[in-house]
Image 1 (cartoon, rainbow, N blue to C red):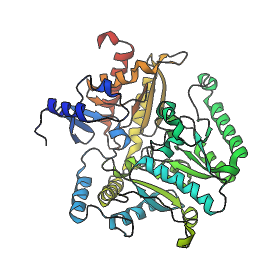
Image 2 (image 1 turned 45 degrees about the vertical axis):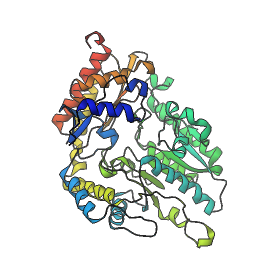
Image 3 (image 1 turned 90 degrees about the horizontal axis):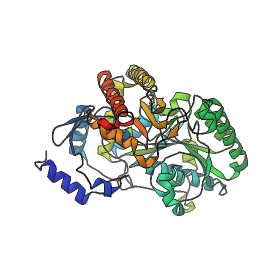
Amino acid sequence: MSDLTTETLQEYDRKYVWHPFTQMKEWEAEPPLVISKGEGSWLIDSDGNRYLDGVGAIWTNVHGHCHPHINNAIKEQVDRLEHSTLLGLASEKPSILAKKLIEIAPEGLSKVFYSDNGSTAVEIGIKMAFQYWRHLGRAEKSKFISFKNAYHGDTVGAMSVGGVDIFHEVFRPLLFPTIQAPSTCCYRCELCLEQDSSRCNRECLAELERIMETHAHEVAGLIIEPLVQGAGGMIVQPDGFIRRVRELCSRFDILMIADEVAVGFGRTGTMFACNRESVTPDIMALSKGITAGYLPLAATLTTQKVYDAFLGEYSELKTFFHGHTFTGNPIACAAALASLELFERESLLKNLSSKIEVLQARLNAMIELKHVGDIRQCGMIAGIELVRDKGTKEPYNWVDRVGMSVCREARKHGIFLRPLGNVIVIFPPLSVSIEELNFLMDGVQKSILAVTEHPEDI
C-alpha cells in the first residue's frame, strides 16, 4: 500500500500519465479519482471512498476484484515460472489453457494462437484470413467485409475494419480499404424511428447478401462483433442475425471472423456469444474477460482447415510470421485457468439468469424517463441512450457531454461508470449480487434524472 498522499498521487498522474481516449487538457484541469484497492464489485479510492464498478474495469472483470482463488493461482505461478517464450519452447500453463479453451469453444474450433490484447487478437485473425487464401492460390481474395459502427481495436489492421468515425477517421490515410456493410438495427434510420426495426434488420441482411454476391471473389473474410456492437453504442443484433451471417459466409466461401473480445466469457448469458445461435466461426478473437480482468492475454482460435493451409516445407514460407514477446505468458494463463475453474465451481452461467431478469426489469422501467430514447440489453450488457427529444429521438450534441455528466454525477451515489458518448454503459462484474445490481441501477436512474431533468440541482 502506497504511503503517498492522495494529492501527491494526483500530482504524479497529471504530470506524467497520458490517459487513453482522454482529452488531457480537460483532464489536467481537475484532480483525478485515484483508485488504490478493489474488493468484489467495488473500487476503493485513495481516501477510502467506495464505488461500485459499473463497467467491470472496462468490460473485463468477471468474478470481482481481487478474488482469492485467482489471486492464489497467480501467486503459485509466480513461484514456478514468470515467463518463458513459445518461440521454440512449449509451456505448461499455455498448453493446458489451450486445451480448455477448445473444449468450451464453439464446436469445430481446434487451434489457439496467443497474443496480449483484443486488438492483436483481431489483427491476427485478419492476417490469418489474408494468408490462408494466398496459400490456397487465391491471392485475389484479399479484402474484408466489415460493419458500420463496428469497433475491433486500435492497431492499424483492427482500425481498418472498424466503423466508428470519431475513433478512426483521423487515421484513415494509414488504413487499408474495406467493404462496409450496414449495421444491424441502427436505431437512427427512418425505419427504426418508425419502430420497424425488424424490417431494418431484414434490409441490412439483404444488403449484405448483395455485397457478397458482388464481391465474394475478392473477399478473404467478414468480421463481426456477434450479438452486440460494443463501442458503437451497445447495438444489439436481433435473434437469428449471426446465424444468417454464418450461412452467407459459408455460401459465398468467405471466412467468418467473430470478434468476441467484449462479449465472450459469459457476458451475453452463454460462454460465448456465438453459442447463443449454435454458430462456429472460422476464426474467433478473445481477450478482456479471458483472465477475468487480471492480466493482458488474448487468444485467436481457428479451425483445422485454416491451420492446415499453413502447413508445408520450410522453403515454402507458409509459416504464420506473427508473434508477441509475452505470447502465452504463464502467469496470465494461470489467471485464465483459475477464472474458468470459477465458472464451473460457482455455476456462474446458470446463476446469471436471475441477474439478467433483474437488469431487464430495471431497464424496462427506465425507458419511461423523459430523456431516455432507447434501452439496449443482451445478457449482462446494457446501454441507455440519452436524447434531447424523446419523441423525435433527436440526440444530444456529442460535445454537450451529457453521458459524461451522468457518469460524474453517479460518483455521488457510489458508482463508477464510463459512457460511450451519450450512451450510459452497464457492464458490471458477472459476480455482482442482486442487491448490488439494484444499487447500481438506483444510482444510474438518479444520475440521469439529475443531469437531464434537474440540472439546476447539481
